[in-house]
Image (cartoon, rainbow, N blue to C red; front, side):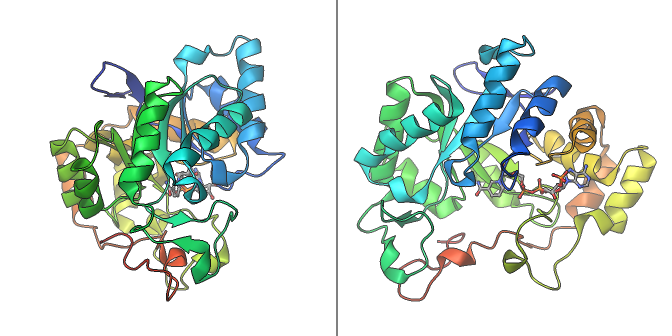
Length: 315
Ligand SMILES: NC(=O)c1ccc[n+]([C@@H]2O[C@H](COP(=O)([O-])OP(=O)(O)OC[C@H]3O[C@@H](n4cnc5c(N)ncnc54)[C@H](OP(=O)(O)O)[C@@H]3O)[C@@H](O)[C@H]2O)c1
């Protein structure tokens, strides 16, 4: 399995397993099958509301001798309602208790969006806290403290634009080590990738398959389908691979991590086997031309008139 190298010498598998929308009663079995198949990198988040079951499944696999804790790479994310400096450690400790872990491998600020601590899903403008009141740099101080205390080995961000990253880089002691964002052939974000790599920030690609199982309310009627793309399909045919494997292998070649979500052991196996698919220059050039700046996760759900959040991805 190809790996990403961190500046302290730590490694993380480039292909990991996503867990958003992996439901209670299903997610535990999905984690067990993934670990049995050889996944060692699991992407979690407090707001996915499934970390307890994931923790149980990890414990079971450790007990059964499938995997050792030190072989795993477990990422989780700080939810928007714990952005004040003093709220970060309690939120991380809750995630660690749910996951039954002593430490995370990577902890990310999930979104550059702050909401009140008493609220889980903000719906009203007054549920939000403007970044002028709770700046990302304040949240980052909590992240740095978490790393210092050994509660997480690495810290980073998610859904950060180049502008927001640049702002944070000017106001931090420790640099963010990862930026996890939506990446696939229709949203290649080449400039952001170049910027991150120039700054020594690694990237993780989310929704690499187009996130088809998200709620209808998050979808547009005319949304494109990566699986139906004739260029991806013809590259798949050429390599005797599946379209999902081409979509995943492309990130491995680009030097990012990629975290396709699947609860099906058959598809998990297929996705992990993408590590063996070697794209050539012609494939990469053809995929390069598919970019159309199309976001499946628009972030618009955070842009409520009057809450102070506009153009989350560009500001
Ligand atoms: N940081 C963030 O804000 C953020 C946002 C979005 C996602 N993420 C992370 O990224 C992960 C992946 O993104 P995502 O869940 O949005 O979507 P995704 O991985 O692009 O797509 C998941 C969908 O693809 C299906 N699928 C998986 N493998 C397949 C295959 N080989 N062939 C056909 N269909 C396949 C899954 O169904 P089955 O499960 O039935 O196989 C599911 O319906 C998330 O789970 C989460 O961990 C992070």
